[in-house]
Image 1 (cartoon, rainbow, N blue to C red):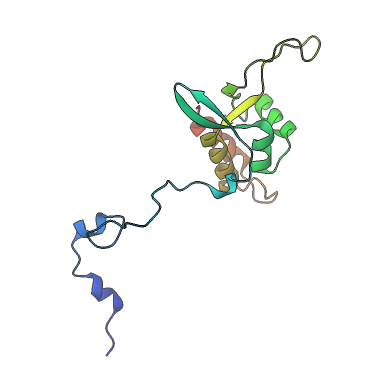
Image 2: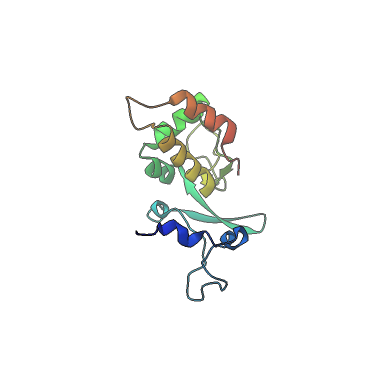
Length: 148
């Protein structure tokens, strides 16, 4: 009679399963860099130093590319209150850019904000017109959107 393959693991103690690798020795030739969201690699970003730390920021155009929308859509979501206003901006340009309008600099979104927004859109099926949960999406943004 064949043995159940799971019987081989019955002898393991619970503390043996707390490691991220099998055995007692950590792997030597494995990349230890943090896992990133691979879909972000093709999206342009800018680096700025915030409180002494270099961080990646994405313009509204980059965010639009990440979520498959137009920048005007993101501005509209911000205007309607579905997205909070951008917490970061590029340095204010010198001189008047548009007559009669105050120059503020371009909107910048942190990597955490871009990832959160994309994952929320997928989680609430925003791209599916028949099964999208806009109310859940807006509540998720209002309650859990990263502010920095």
